[in-house]
Amino acid sequence: MADGVESLREQVRGTIRRYQMLQTGQRVLVAVSGGADSVGLLHLLHSFSEELGIELAVAHLNHKLRGEQADQDEAYVRRLCRDLGVPCYVASQDVAKRAREAGLSVGGAGRCARYEYFSTLAEQHGFTRVALGHTASDRVETLLINLLRGTGLYGLRSIPPVRGIFVRPLIATRRETVAEYCRQQGLKPRCDRTNLETSDFLRNKIRLELLPLLDEEYSEDPHRALLRVVRAAEEELAWTEPLVKQEFKEVASVGVGSVKLDRTRLRELPPGLQHRLLRRAIVELLGAATNVGEVHYEALRELIDEGQTGAELHLPGKVLARIGYTELELITGERAQHQPRCDEPWCYELSVPGATEIPEVGMLVCAELLPDRPSDLGDVAGGHIVVDADIVGSKLYVRNRQRGDCMQPLGMGGHKKVQDLFVDEKVPQQQRDCIPLVVDNQGRIIWAVGLRMGEQFRVTKDTTKFLKLSAVPVTNKVLGATDIEE
Image (cartoon, rainbow, N blue to C red):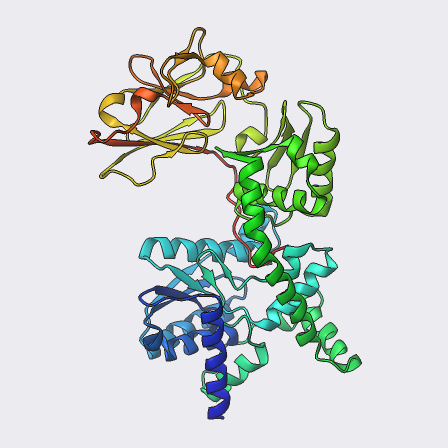
């Protein structure tokens, strides 16, 4: 028995080392539902937290789906944390109501709720990692779900061991092994009866019906065979993703709520690389490419090959794909939902510090006074810049272009008409009145948002006060991260 426990601990240590999940000194939030996987994960991490040099706390979200049982799960997690001497954060959310209002499945709404809660706790309390209890068994089941949906390479990877701050130390360990560990340690985790229902849950059917059938029919362990597929996809992505990232820098320009890709260069690339680049563009906009499937990528490639200037395609996640003069532009936020209302002049005083909504273009322009000189001065073609606060002054405005507008773009010795700037930057004519211009009290253009900033406002070695200007799209709905790459 002791050998089995130590073998499991060594396997988990090996997984943590292989994927560099945890580092000495980190504060780690462990997501605990009360089930065997998450309870086993907490107990394991707690048993060698001193060895790893990490500080643990627990997060539990009561989904309010199973009445008294859900409340008992919460009480169990609280008792477990008290016994282990681990801080415990608990919250409740009506997931069924959220699912109805958002048009999501209950499972999808639950995932969104959990990830939002864990991310918020991590940000508020300084946790640099969130440990989740997904196992190798979850990975196999997810692979089969993805295969049945016609997945690509990312779906073959199934659940990734690490994504951002989220880590999965049990990802190489089978569910049965974790359950046995809990029995040996006398932990008595809670059992969610919905995990035994096969009428409405595809994952449960795969777990309780398909995999046992494969066990009976084939001499080789199906889990082991399917995990080889997962590892092969994982290894392929590990060495090709840096190449895709470099190619993306060559063909794409990331702006405020949009990504522009060079249409001519895309046409010259192999379909597989096109797919990877288009997917990366969507991830830049939404944080994940979930729900964007092969049919959407095929439609995008057709748009690239045959679309005329102005042709559009609507994608999941409220993303609009539009053909410009020489580029394919992917847009999110209000700009993707309707044509901006820029046929009339508009002007708003910018709150300094604060955020000012520009409803005509579905954007927030934010101003923040920084206490110290920042290491990142921004990207004029991206979402923020840093300027000399003394030079710009305290009265700033955001407006669209006016006849005769000129500015001195960063790095240029003379002035340039804004009209010529738009032409040089290949901004479609119908969009030029919708580009926000941040101006000072004298009407001098500080920033043509997403394009250029003014030379005279740049930060120098003599600058002592720093103002960060940023622009973000106003979105109708924040997409939650999921634990499934589809």
